[in-house]
Length: 90
Figure: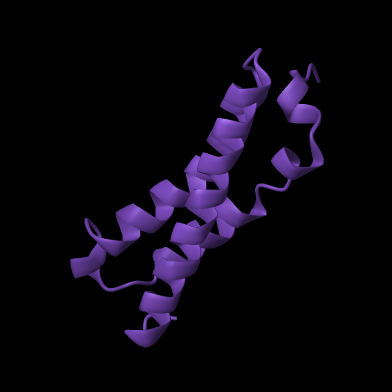
């Protein structure tokens, strides 16, 4: 299989987070489909997507910017899973 630079990164290859979040959020109540489910799924995909986008940038500052966005998305997931737990969804 042909790999781009970002696809060789160990952190990128660990996409289990996205799959785990999708599995967990699929059990949330139907009324959360367009609220918490959509938000947490988007944040999970954002982690890997921003790693991919950041590594394709030429400048170091740009790379750092996208890695920071990726980290921020991880923090969103922490917040959203805490909320889901407190609501009894997890």
